Length: 488
Ligand SMILES: [Fe+2]
Image 1 (cartoon, rainbow, N blue to C red):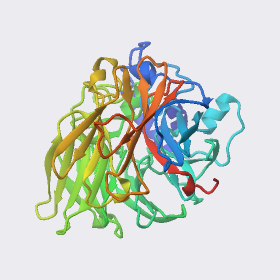
Image 2: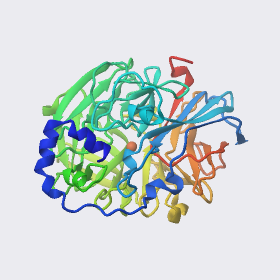
Image 3: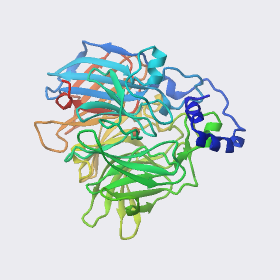
Image 4: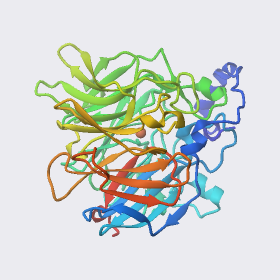
């Protein structure tokens, strides 16, 4: 029985639903001892600590902090056929930079009870909530601390500056609410804004605001149908942008034995909601859209007439034919959506038709007009790192004013994960800073952290820090300034 089923068994209402749908359990998934998300650049690793690195180039001295990357790294996989990339135990990879030097690189599990019990380590403070004790998607700095975060129910797990897990908590608040893997920070107020859901609650999602001190400031309930998976959201200066799209909770998927309870649902009306940040559910304006899915959006902003611009990586469809991850031959485009109040329509423009994902930008401009977006290209099957499509793995810099795109190739045999922008504190321009990412060798022998000058990504890297260890391809990265942490 999967961990999801174990947790579900504790929920009487859900078990009633489960029994009702038991008839669907007629066709189980055949066992195949193979899964692309468990091998090659995705292969899990043991925890490690390294010092003393070969550095090519010069690490900018302004970078004093932690470059963090979160991803799935399962401790145990009972059936590779049924393993989904989204449900592996979380592991954090961190590189400490200071005074132009790389001091250490660590790979550490997120210390959930599930992980620490298996590793025979003492449990951390607090308790998990939700459907599964897994936190594997993102890691951010907020209110002086480091937080690992995930959608669908679990509480964040706090980590210290040495990447030791400390406790479960909704930031510095004692409420036990679900959160999100993709909060959006308003850099003027320091608040986190997020659309959150619990996998066991099919008819309701929540808008949560966490203030600059880590306290829950606002909570708005929003009715929905079918238990939609909402991986990301976005925000403008005045509104939240809600992605109610057709991947929904799937009892039949569970009954087939899959660990991942979500599937493409053609019966679910795809729509985008605009919620005034000071409003309630009845204030939402919904815009219907053709079936598609957004895992990750870039930025959004208000126009003077109240319309909204949203930029996002848009998948035609996904999770239709596979239960192991988003690998079913998807079409992904980088698009600009204009949500028009007057017509109630969304005008879609393709910024780039090259398959690409993980859009990032200068996040000081979150919710405001901006010029530069950064994405990474995908292989034909929609997975960065598919060895047969390795040539396709580039960083793209989109100039959204001139419509020009430049690119950076990370070298034969290497693939990059998500690339993030770190602003140069000595400068003010939108692309004055660095683009940093973990870059993985596809033969799993080593990895490197590559730092580019964001102004011109066609140049050779500013610095390459060679790491003597494999770091699996994973999910999201962020930079945390040491000065922003409570404990220096
Ligand atoms: Fe994500």
